[in-house]
Image 1 (cartoon, rainbow, N blue to C red):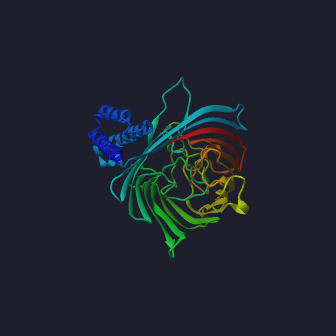
Image 2: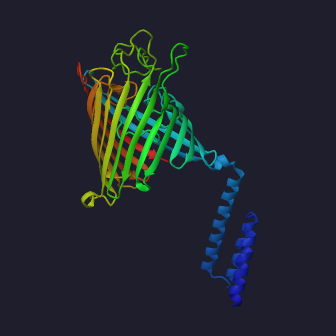
Image 3: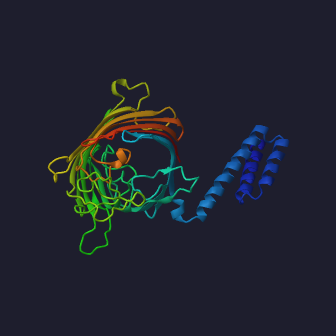
Length: 432
């Protein structure tokens, strides 16, 4: 009993010394060694006690540092990734293939303003092209650009509602199962309201809607409205243990585009096929061609997934097979006004641990005037409309937060002279 009392006193005394900003760490170690020498503590107990005190000291130091920082810094979250890429591309109209090394770096910051408001911002490599954050390694080791990728504020008045203002990442506020219409690097600007809530109190079944106004350009003229697009999307989601379904309809009402030549046009919509586009700034030279149609496109989208179907693939309990599709129609022109994409994916539902993999196959067709040609995926004939093609994707988690990827595109012109392009991308992505 006497030994236990002395031991408790020694531990308490050591903790008291440690609590004094740990200035007497050496004294604490000396005291523990004395207790070991006198047989009050065993050597193993002494080592364990030192470790516990050291851990407490580290925790107190970290908490003290946090207390010195403002609230907005303590509540800040960081995310990012680095992608290295080797890319091979060959068009049937070119005499030689092109191979280039590319990098992409992205860093995002999220800061909590209060319980209902947060601010998000991100920087990324690349130039002014809204459809690319890639930087080609070239020009005698020249320094690549880093630019503001997005900057927005989000207000959440309720769990089922959020309002975003600024230039923001598209995915959280506009659902699309394929990249037929939107290049994944595009971060639109404007305002969006997103609502999602369970139906009849069933957490597996929900209704969602995304609506807002996205600003396309500022023309500096008082007699002409700035180009913009109004978005209205409504859909349903079902998330079961074995089956998940999502379906949505979207109306994009583009205003102020007809009679203009949009910046970063791929020159494939009717009226701008002969336009002059600056390859560095994306600006269209006035008078070289203007759009002859309105673009008030309607889109139907859907995705159907099966988890652990028939006992699963030889991957694990969260294997998923899924089918996905988009269909777009522009009612203004009488022809060349439709587009569709459909595909199949299988593998892990979420790429998380080493050994996880996922494969996707996608078939795409986008007629000339179904959609504005400054928005589609730039990896399909430089983002053109009037295309037909396939895409094959493989992703594999090699190490924790390190993903290997292969992406192969084969794309051809739909009407007119053929210019088939084969594009292969080999990626290593580091997430942090």
